[in-house]
Image (cartoon, rainbow, N blue to C red; front, side, top):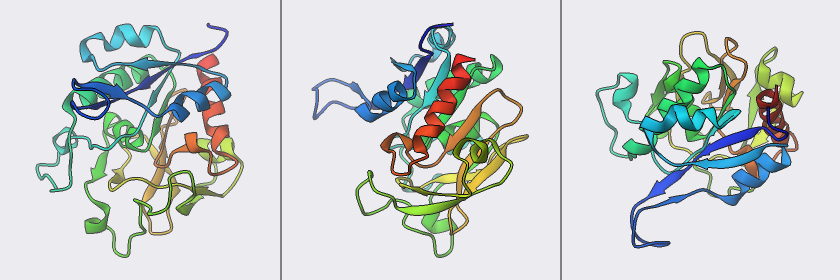
Length: 238
């Protein structure tokens, strides 16, 4: 085991334009700094599904990040495609491959925002394609205020891994998503809800550490956000 657990972070991918005239990878710096603050050594993982096992061998834990895109509904058995859905197939193929491999190897997985949704699909769960069309009187889950500020609160389910980590029944969270988990998958459980009933967290007790949160703890808008990252890194250390 490494002195600092090596945490593989999945990258986002962008088409030419802006930073480069050629396709490029991107990820906010605070993902990396938060992992370092939590005691891990973050490395970036490019999208190569065929090499997922090789990349996993370098890592003690996998952090599946968020991004401005969606998991293909066909991957969770939905034949419809909402007009708001935006796909990045190469990213999703890689993230599913390395997440499933990590679960099979019982290596810790933390899914953040879209990463929580990806984890749910990897566990056999399903997603809500567009919250405003599915949830009556839904909150503004794509919050209008900056992402480094809270958007709403969540209620945390007692006697769950998340509850043990944060030591609280509620948290303030930021919110940057138009989709959400509908069902967490066989054996998985919901561990947090927004006031409108939207699922905000999932976990699977059958694995050493398989946790998804719908918000972005790397921004640390709640004092307990860093505890989530520390628990993940500690699990990777063990």
